[in-house]
Image (cartoon, rainbow, N blue to C red; front, side, top):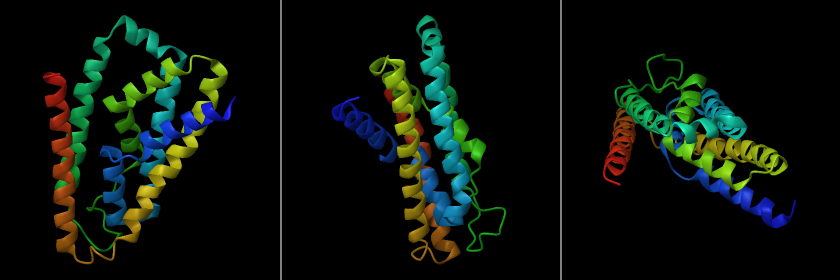
Length: 199
C-alpha cells in the first residue's frame, strides 16, 4: 500500500470522526456533566457501532441496500427521531455538579452504538468507503485505521469537555448549557429532515 493511499484513508477517517456533529456534541455535553471517565462508554459504543456498521455494509449489506434503497429512508426516519430523542434527553436533564447523581446527563454504551446505526451520515460514509475500497485488503486496512482514528477523535472531544468543566461551575450554568446543546441537537435533526425533503 502506498503512502498516498494511507494518507487518503487517514484524512477521510479524521475528517469524518473529528468534525462537529451529533455524536461529538453529545460527547462534549456528557463529558462536561460527568467527566471523561463516565463518558468513555458512550465513546466506545459510538466507535464500535460505526466500525460494525462499516463491516456489515462491506460484507454484503450494501447489496441489500442496492436492491431495496428504501431501507435508507427508514434509517433516516429512525435516525432523526433518535437524535431528537437524545436532544430532548439532554435538554430536560437535571444538572448536578456531583457526578454521582443519577438524573444528570449520563449517556450509555448502547446509545452511542445505536446512534451510529441510526445516523444517516454514518450509513452514507460507510457506503462511500465500501465503493472506494473494493479490494478486501485495502478495506481491512481502512477499517483498522478508522477504528484507531475514530477512538482518538471522539476521545479528544471527551477530553475537551472534561477540561472546560471549570467554566460550568454552577448548576445554573450546566442547565443553560444542556438546554442549548439539547436544542441544537433537535434543530440539527429537523434541519436534516428539511434538507432531505426538499433536496
